[in-house]
Length: 484
Image (tube, rainbow, N blue to C red):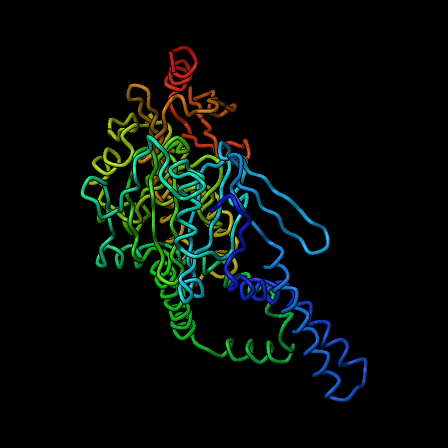
């Protein structure tokens, strides 16, 4: 019975121990190096000290598991934990927005899951979590907290039994391997790894001897331009392969299905994750077409969710499907999000806005290109190519930007590198505003903004720049004066 205090699975001790190692490995290594250099002692003393530290970490991990209990009582999830100071956390069922089940490699070895409880006030960190319980206990706890079962595990009177995702009446979509492969090769995730590579590179000089860096520099100076280009291409290829592997790890076995007023998503190769999204939390739908996918007519579909994301990397957006043909998106939205419609009747920007978009994209490149052309005229052709590419990107941003109003829905579309379309309902908009500076005022242009709920009461903002001033005013009037 869930009304009686329960402990998590004993394997939680392993997870506690791993967490301690992750938290203290760097301070322990730094401390050990400092002690070894300043204190002379026999090797057996250091071994004994290391053994005592490990034993203490194991004991702490075990006691943390033993002192942690949970139960469901009086419409609340009640958690008690703490070694010396006993802490209590009570979470009302009414505050719970979603309950996610995740199974990493170690979880799957023992047939366990991690339970994460999201509430209306939580960010991308869970309000409460159980590190390791049996899958049966995790699913039973989820059903009890959702009101599908009572604390004895029996179905609540008047509640429908939970159907399996394979049930023919449950709308479901799975990603197939060819589409997953295409999603991985065109994900654009190489940018994340390039940023990580740059971050590591910035700290590299502090981790290696100075002579080593001088040797690398002297070696690179004597290489030809073609060899350097080949080395750069090899690095980009490795980063691209890493991005492909990351997409496979994250989206393998991706399945989405809808049951009543909730969407369920399962995904992951090594770590199996099951995400629950109540439809009432979805504030908008975002369609992203990056520069690799758009020519082939493919896009990724995300849900903008209030109250937190399913993953620390999701930035409060949850992938509803990693890759769809753009022609499939209206049917997909109609199947899983019937409150939303996806119709394309765009109103573009005036021609006089084009120059502003091109100038904004080309100006930063031009500022860098001028001194490079002056000091290195032999490479001026590369600067001109980059400048032309930036200008073309600016023109694409102009062509793609626009908006549409369909009944009680608002559509905004713009482009950074990827073209993004956001669809939201009028009653989900937190605020709408417009702005104009002197240069826009001269051309009768405005920038229009709207915000939707994101996390902890903060809003996520979207905008369309340099739209017709009269249309921006019309849009503001649609939001302000009509019934929502």
